[in-house]
Length: 392
Image (cartoon, rainbow, N blue to C red; front, top):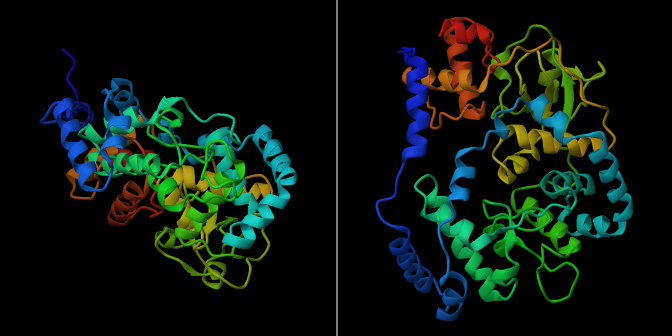
């Protein structure tokens, strides 16, 4: 019999628990309760009948929810795939083709064309791949499932509101497996609360109307705090030695402070004189480096994955004329998915806040890593490497 190490055993148990969580009631009973909740929230009996009468649990949605390994890739792995030469070419073509529309949207919401085009390309390849899952059953499954019901129960209610308002019919409500809809992949709450009729035809249609979809994305980003006329991301070069603990998302400092630390533009020239930004090291002190301005916070509200958000922001800078990404100061030896899960388990056991054992090096894992690096006298850049892993 093979004997597991304690770290691997705990990691395996955490993964098992994620799969093994179970509901205390059956789906039919849960759905009956949700129908009553929807009625109390103002959804009419006819809409409840129209949307929920034949809904069934979709096990394939639960399986996909448990296997989201894409964001466990490193920033370079993810961005290399997503910001391809082909996607850049198509994106630049879309900028020219839709220049008049983008100008109108920016005049109203303050969001640049390059930012919207980058999201458009990453989410659906500029409207080409919208998904074909039936939205209502997918949301009902996730709202019932034990892992994230508090997130998807409101989304299911917003989907019913969209039907009741006449924005979309249940039959046309098809998209990604997690309930995202349209050319910019909005969850129903975003569609319901921030969708706009920008083409003026009397209906908010983020699926078929390019104008509505792009303007709705700008409306949502403005709601997230987007500042018109301000930058969002700048690739930089960091010195071989500095106070790495300063490089974290919640530490926005004047650019003059970063200059004093030895940070320069990626090409070695001086940083701009004005502005505040956080220094991001998505793969540690040896990997790519960026200054994230306050507008980058809107990216993280769009998608909480730091890898996705940084890739979307970088894609937008490329569309705006930035040079191709530098690879950093030195090769970065990365941990495997299973090693990151083991690391997260060990960090949790040491008392650090780690809510999910998922193999993804997000802000929570980086914050805990940084604290442990400081404790061990290692460079506190927040990125776990083999040296830290071996010491654990």
